Length: 213
Image (cartoon, rainbow, N blue to C red):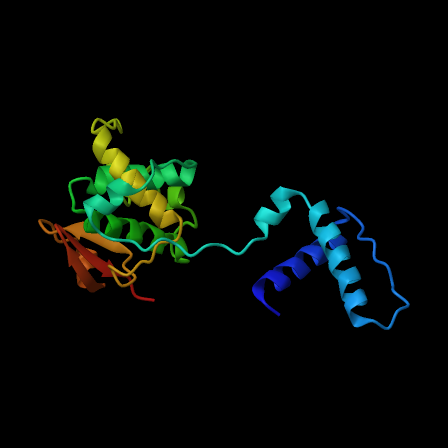
């Protein structure tokens, strides 16, 4: 069975389960197989036509994700990025933590945040990860959330770029740069945890680490 027929059959099954419409079929008394096939195809088409467009769209196979390129021209070619709270939290984190980094470095910081979301050690949302510990002295995970300064976005162009990166990452871009890193720091400091975790990458002014299991 080809993909189209499989999809059509799935749509008919969905129609039957949801009660959107009832397909009328006519059982032929003829022994002519062509006539029987025509009757079945006609019933299938009537059932398909009765399904709302929104339901059909929701059940279509998803398209393959766009191939990511870690350069400014590729990022600039992406559409203006929008999204909800999780998108905003990731975009702001990239802006305040990595707007001075290269595009590859910004993607790498996004990887760390999303790797934490996937880890059982950390909150299971982007906003939860970014804001973890921000209400306790010296407990914040990302310095901009507890430095006492207002989180003003003054560089609109820089924010537009990291927002596009945030959107691409949330939409399922691969995380191949940091080998599962859950931590990073700038090269001019040496936090105590850096001695305990495996160093996985150096990108721009950031070193990346993966926390042990």
